[in-house]
Amino acid sequence: MSAPADNAVRAGVGAPRRARIAERTLRTDRWWVPPLLTTLGLATFVIYATVRAFVRTAYWVPEYHYLTPFYSPCVSTSCVPGSSHLGHWFGEFPAWLPLGVLVLPFLLGFRLTCYYYRKAYYRSVWLSPPACAVAEPHGKYTGETRLPLIVQNVHRYFFYVAAIVSVLNTYDAVVSFHGSTGGFGFGLGNIIIVGNVVMLWAYTISCHSCRHITGGRLKHFSRHPVRYWMWTQVTKLNNRHMLLAWITLGTLVLTDLYVMLVSSGAIADPRFVN
Image (cartoon, rainbow, N blue to C red):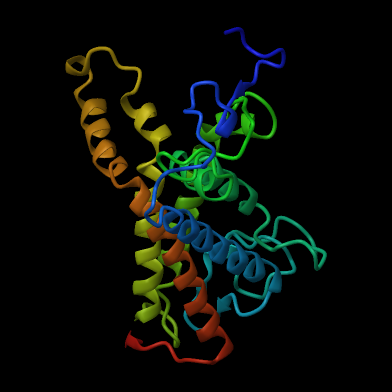
């Protein structure tokens, strides 16, 4: 059979090799539950993160130097005093521009092009396909060869930026060990912030691109023992990439929510030292 003129492959219920049945699927179980839950989970995070990125309130706790990751780095003169750990690189931002705009688009790109997230939203949001033995509703498939999906091919470069942002988050975590009266301080907020940074590092370096960078092009592992060891460690994390992808969505929301509650005075930060 010759390929269609537009080089697209017929798919879904119109696929040439699909059994000639009227039903979309013969499955009788609730196959639609996993894609539904995935859609709800992703939508919840996107809505929460979008609102928090634009509200510009309760993102900094001056007493303990807690900064939410959604606003790091805060490098505009629009940032509240003390929250600009790296100084002011820009002047006032208009109200419609998030204060974390310097890195948020790259982090969004890193997540959107992530191999796991592609699988997640392709199957749940795009329904391509929604489940095993369930035909997708689309009439053709062009792969990741055209806009907008061709952007998926730059995932490696988003990984580089995400690694730099993880360094910035680590710096924020170190700065957060600040006491209310100066010097070293340690509270519940530090545990949450550090825990989030650890999970973000685990998710970032478990990336498939990181695995390929460390040892994907080596032909003789025995000649590169250091890179082989790095590759094996990244591979162990890569096996849990899906789990880490979801955990980090939760830790990001938890960290931001905690900073917001402490900053707004809704709760007090339990202190262990200073």
